[in-house]
Length: 247
Ligand SMILES: [Zn+2]
Image 1 (cartoon, rainbow, N blue to C red):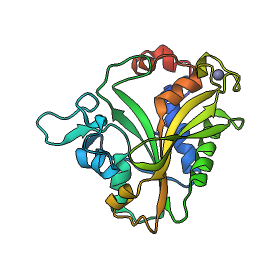
Image 2 (cartoon, protein in one colour):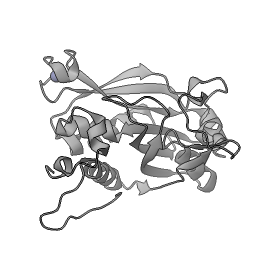
Image 3 (tube, protein in one colour):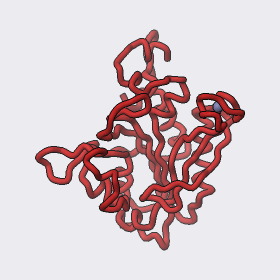
């Protein structure tokens, strides 16, 4: 399903495939390399190498699918372990984009599924700053939602970045005046990002006194729901051809 770039006449691409393709293309245009990694992960790459504390709730049985009979193995809860693996095997500078499937052991509802898609990004170089992060993500959002977007950065906490930011996009339905899509606020939470935590660089064998980086995680399902006005994430996985026939 990933990277299906063309469709035959009278056929349709699934909305998730469309968003994955368009997102990946937006970063490849900026010379990002596409990287992938295993969906069956070990606890080290999913948590420890990303500075997730031992007592973090994400490690709890509620959130993670641990594999029975395999010690410390799990279905990855985010695409970030690919960052950790890439850093172990590559010297900076580099920029990667990582589209992939992730898994969370939680109840499903309109906005939560046990499997969903993320697109992860990691840039490591010299003199990388939050300004680079903001410009890059603005470029990405313009490619998906048009040139007329506006974003704002708010402080946010993720263990693998410092500082961390939540990025909001001005509501593209009401233009910021407030509507049900943005719950009246005029802004829509769109993704999480930040400057790579020195501990994460160190775990990847990269000297944080020389190199800096930024990282971001994009919820592909959420973007597809916003872009196409899909009200329930479960529709994306229903296998109902009436969904993809519209695209
Ligand atoms: Zn709105």
